[in-house]
Length: 123
Image (cartoon, rainbow, N blue to C red; front, side):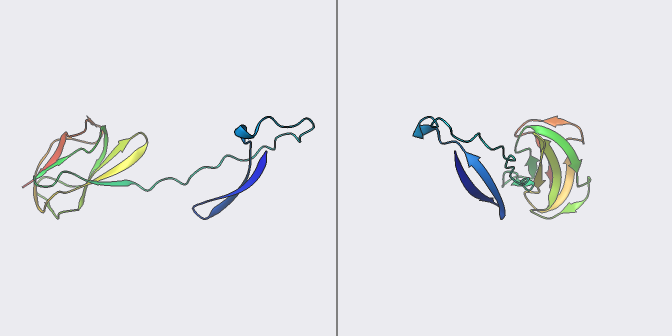
């Protein structure tokens, strides 16, 4: 067993590590020391921009709609947050691909969507 100090995002953890390729521990070795598991901090929400070149804002992945941040008739700017998706307990923010007026919304909160499904249209 080797004692190591690991720094993750500025937080320092002291851990005991068994090095498997150095062979078995000699007789009389101290018992392994339990250590707290190291958990990485939660990742920030993913920011995804739908495919450029069209007014269709499409889903970048399969997931469930959490919130639609725009309404039909609302003016939005390119890069403005328009939809929040949830997939595997992570939120993904989807942004308008162009500036214009929201002409149609094709999904509602709670809907399951697949990658490439049109969420809303900006015209």
